[in-house]
Length: 126
Image (tube, rainbow, N blue to C red; front, top):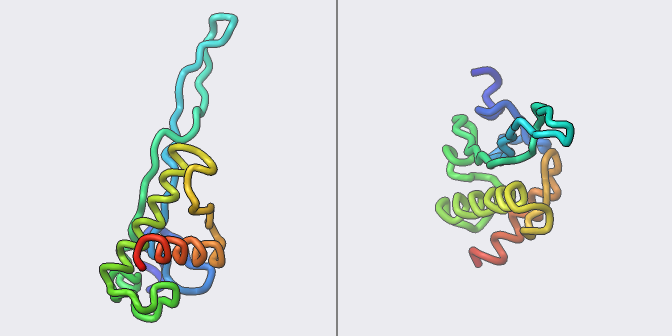
């Protein structure tokens, strides 16, 4: 499986830990009719979103979120719920568009990811 701190879907947390989850767009392609009657095959953008929960043995889901600062004081179930709600915010942005959620893009940005998680906890858990 490789390095034990490597996530199941091949990314490391910028802070050196193991990533909990990630949401990515599912991109679509289509034949598009041109004004001259010809068609071209082109990428049409996001047609869906995929939420990935890290199943690596070192991941927070399997370690009970021990030592995860931004979920400190939460039960395991609350930490799991906060993670899923955080990722659902990314799903909204992918499917509906920028500004459709208060969750900001945090790809490779630990500081923004923590701010997003804090927003979810403050708004939905506490």
